[in-house]
Amino acid sequence: MVASPLIQNDAIVQALHSFDVPFLRAVQETTVPTLTFEDLTIALAEHTEARFNHTLIPLFLRHPALASRHATQFAQLPLATASTLRHYYTAAVYLQKLWAVQLNLLLDNFQELPNYFGEAHYGLVPVDQHHGEKGLRQLAAQQEKYNQQSVYEDTLHVFLDQLWAQRND
Image (tube, rainbow, N blue to C red; front, top):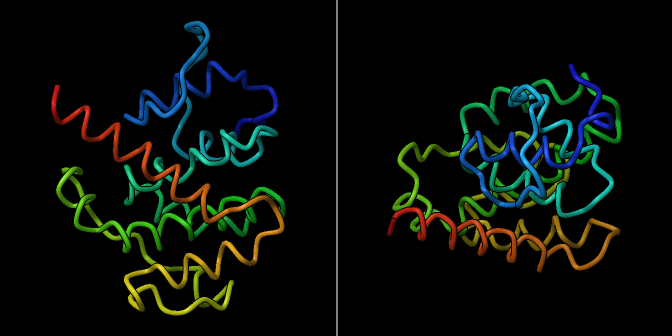
């Protein structure tokens, strides 16, 4: 796998766009080869800027089959990287349940993300309980960073707005 600290921000943004996740904007186009899904998720997880970490949520929601396959390999990664990936993957699982109606309407390949970590790793309530909202709040409360609940919601709202805009083009 590629060493993500060497990847420049614009290359990461360009890779996100190649996976149809225009969540961030590049300052300039790069000539760096396109990243694989796995390398992109690692680069986002290891990034020092939170906005790049948050972008894991729409990436996982946009590509649930790739995310699910990759999630089974998180344990093979460095501890901090695996922890960040598990956290945002789990947030995506619970957000997907909470916003299933809109996501199903807006995403052509809507497929549920398996809940690998919610109950087993974080001790959250099942994803079906309260349509994912209760588990999402529990996950946010376990994080020592800023208000994760608002980060989850804001990230998903931006993603939904982008999906609606794409649909209306």
